[in-house]
Image (cartoon, rainbow over all chains, first blue to last red; front, side):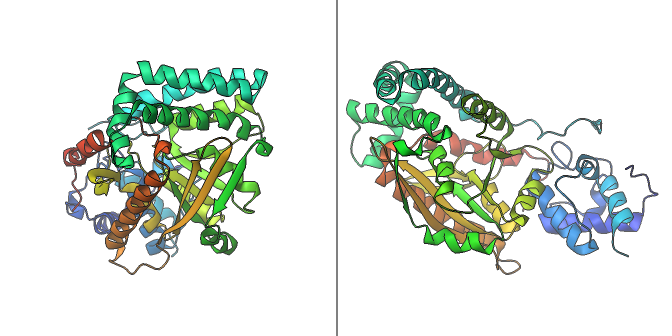
Length: 92
Length: 327
């Protein structure tokens, strides 16, 4: 599956806001570089942070993030990709 | 900014390798290889006499391990350690590793395994909603797996560093091809999603929560009368996933005797919003309390052969180097 849907700026900010709140990040939502890697070097999140993000995203948008998905690396590679995934899969 | 190829597995960015990663597991594997050969060809009685040689060798020549043991033993024993204590410590370590060979080959008939506190986990298993099992590098890990036949429904997936996961599974395969272990490797972007999946399937997820992988938040605790540090991650994970946590330890009590203990550690099933950090803190203190109790009960079973009170607190400051500091 490719995630190449036109990005939604408002949704991106909303997702960023959820991350900031869930993880108590010392940054504001619009300061997060949408293309920076979430995991490791970029934002510096660890796999437990990723879990926390996955849990709030699942709850907020009524979608399931599965462990066995081949796409997890891509979905969580950046805010941009995470937003695209949410846009494509959220319950309407 | 760095660009990542989406086909590359994304790894935890540069982990500062903790001391134990570099040394301890390597000598474990070497020792196991040698002992496996002797044990399966010559039998347990002969093999155990070889264990005395190995213990003697370590007491005499493994300076780092001896130093670590001497830092630990007086705290657990409450008196200065003697050469006999050192020897017993190393022998206990060698004996539990050795017995893994028989346990992996399902020679349960050779052992007397006593289980205490099964009531602390029975109902949780029966509910089938997933439970965290937290152990430590204290006693035998293999005996915990072996009691699956005595405690029905005890299906455990272990969370561990991915290098160790590979080593352990290749070792298991070499000793008994049927003895596989369900392992969830750490250091992957979706490691925790895998943990969640196993719990949702009603499985038990086990981990040894007394060692850090290097770059993660630590919590200071009192261990045997001095300040030490425990990784916060395992407890935070259990709290996020809202599951009960049971402490488990398999102590080697000499000859062919093992004693397995289950203790209630925490239950994050119904923590209120905003109460998570406090609940995590309480759980860590409870874990420390259990470590204190069982190291005193079975002092020679402590298998962290590095200076636990020095090297661990050093990593408390590492978190400050992260680009984003969590409040």
